[in-house]
Length: 83
Image (tube, rainbow, N blue to C red; front, side):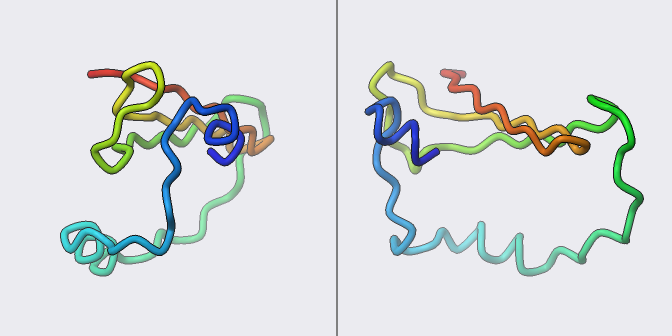
């Protein structure tokens, strides 16, 4: 994400900004995942998440980003999207 900010693809997100109350409450109440065995092959397990860029648009009018992380290599791919 920092590289994308440096290239002016996404707005600068300050981590010291006030946290959304709903986000804080939902993350606080979640129980930790049980220990699982790590994937032993490429693309056996891919984690993904979608987030909004605090209501700001990127330089190409994208509002959301999706992350895909390969469990084996921990390679992360970020995709900007409009929805």
